[in-house]
Length: 251
Length: 104
Image (tube, rainbow over all chains, first blue to last red):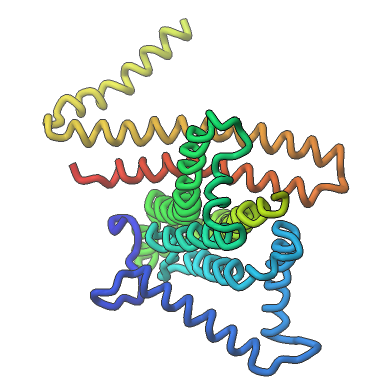
């Protein structure tokens, strides 16, 4: 990756990039939360208004997916969603790193979801009935088979959850890097900045065209991908929790 | 006639590649096969994903046209389905990246 990608602007020795930038995301979110809740008003404006609009979307989705009991899980889902959204959008700024473009970060998020929904399910209906539900409504003879299949499918969930987010962010980075690399942006920019006549006549317009093309076509696509991946991560987490909670109701 | 011309052109275009490949040392072979596997594998995955996503999106648009009232829910289901189909391609993508950047 070092070959085609510019190293990030801020680096601290002995600390991996994704950890450093994760701390930055956390600091940004904490500051925004403090600013938004410092003076709570009945008729919100400014930061409080913005955060309320964002959180209302989470509440709406939770109500739709899990039902009236869904707001209990708002802290978990909204924290994950805001963290992932901020990290994804941070990757669009040149020179910054998206923490979610690293498998360690996304795997951490996915494992939190994995353990949490099992914990919620086991607490709601007890450990033995919860394990019993893995076997499903099939004849007793088939139950061991179903149990093994269900266990495998549950183990595949954090895998696909983490790899989907990581792959999308990573693919966007590599796409952008390869576009700049193959269009020869470095050479053109160097030519334009060299001060020669050819550089000013050809190099500068070429650089401008490349930047306009990439900013105009690829960045909107990446913003869309960042938003959709956040939505899908949160929606899948909600669906898993809903599946763990729902099974209690008809028993 | 046209086929002959096409085949000749293909042979001419492929000749430098073959000559270049013949010069490659035996030690480079695993790397060459890794690059080939990454390209062919990702091409297959992307093409088949296009077929699958096209079916999914087409059915979703069909359903939206029949039931304009349920557009929001259909859209959510479609996005989830597309994400599931896409995640398989992303598995292949991760493997392709590993193959490309592996040090042989």
